[in-house]
Image (cartoon, chains in turn green, orange):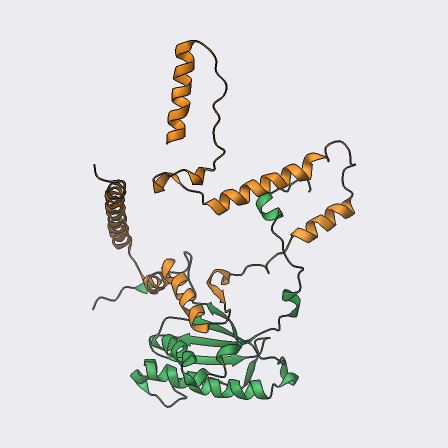
Length: 157
Length: 170
């Protein structure tokens, strides 16, 4: 087996198929959903990370102003517009700019605003019927400090 | 527990008679076949079976290999290792919060939420948004520890009561 490896009898008898799946899987497009307590932003990018043309939507760009930008409805609107653009991309993938033919999606959530749940709900409704099957991986990317810089002092209301 | 009684009776009878009787014929049983109160049983039947199969496989594998074959060549070693090694891609800071969708997207969302809830990510994020002074932090930790200890004690008492009830209070 080798000088520095330990033999695990349980894992050794597990039958594993040859490594084919990893090579075959196409790289997914990314849908970044960034929600804060003041705003919501949805961004659609190519697998490389490059922004897709007309591929970003924020609460403000959907017509909401001020306090409404953080509402559930704003998040829902952003999601709906994003789905339309993604459907366009699925039907006619722009392979020139780094797209791949079977369009798969990777959802990346950042932050815990109201828009986050709105986007998730939008996927499960009829708006996201065409998109739902192409989602491959769901991820949470909220930044978490380990130690790190000192935050502002607590608000005394 | 009848087999235990049989051993003790056999032992007692042999010592009383002064003869060293034969080894009592114990039925070959796995730990999981005997009825124990739930706390003692920490391996399931399938795990027992898997271990016995693995041990048998080891015995078979090493039965005739001790001094017969030459040590395996580097090529053989390499082939052996590649066959059994399937590595995942290298981990990044978000590997733990990544959920792969198999079929149901709603289920994937729920799995992610469960994972975040179990690791208290939302609380961590909201706590990190504003600085928590040392006294405030000390008080919070002390309160959390007390509540955890209390909940554990209550849980142990409730489990004790339910085991007594299950076995029959009298």
